[in-house]
Image (cartoon, rainbow, N blue to C red; front, side, top):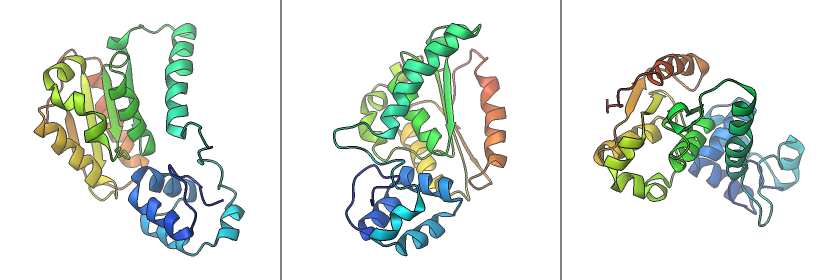
Length: 220
């Protein structure tokens, strides 16, 4: 089965490698699973044959059944319909979008943007740490970009950070430039660092206090 960790089905190893190189979310899944760099993942996949991919033991984890939901869609449903209700039912938390934030790192950073910006009726703060930024962001969130005044009024914090030595840095930089171009207020942190927890711990320490401040975010 050649559809390991993929968003779209493929039929050959060359198509597999092409998609992994082209889609930052898919690449991130492989990098995280195998503990490899981007170039190491590409080299590894290039050595595989159809009858050996299954032997890795990971071929079915991210495959999407015919007519089924992608892992991102399943995860979004889980956050919205399981995590939030469970937390609010079992813990003493303040309900409502004004008291709710979402953040994620790596693949989770891209998912946080998708879920948070796609549900501003539920979240008032969104953050991506070294995130796999959706490639279709400008199209998918066109309404948010076209109506910056409305977007800014609903977001207490929109925070994006990425290490400049991280292979995903161009995605975060391009997103910040797109937001700035469309007057969407946000914080962008271009720091030193690669794709690891040393960077993400610093980002979390900066992001968390902003959630308890009434002031709006600003572009940096």
